[in-house]
Length: 140
Image (cartoon, one colour):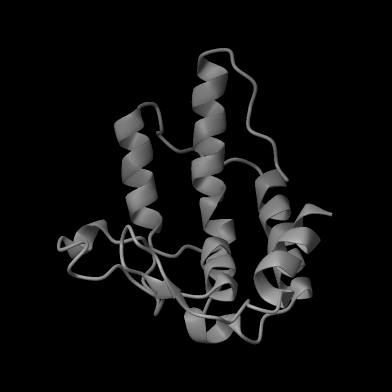
């Protein structure tokens, strides 16, 4: 299974907790922390250490369940509408951040999001795709 392999590579490998610093933005982090960041794990980097595969599987199930729920009536008809929706969904938590020497404009730093928070964007993109007669996005 894909999630199991990703968890093995990022959280169960020998060097999962070994810190490294990215060259492009100077973020000091670990593979385990980055995996948790992608999932938007509540509690920031500190929560990543205690998270196990079952926690990630639960988050994927919640995402899938939310994706099956009836679509909210959003006025997402343009790229600008979509960007505004994304901005509204951002949440700030304690995660490794870009170094100020690499990225001085702190408003451009990456922001963590809970996996389920992507449902609105997921549905919005699917509606935009439907408007141009393209297939909707797949739910994993």
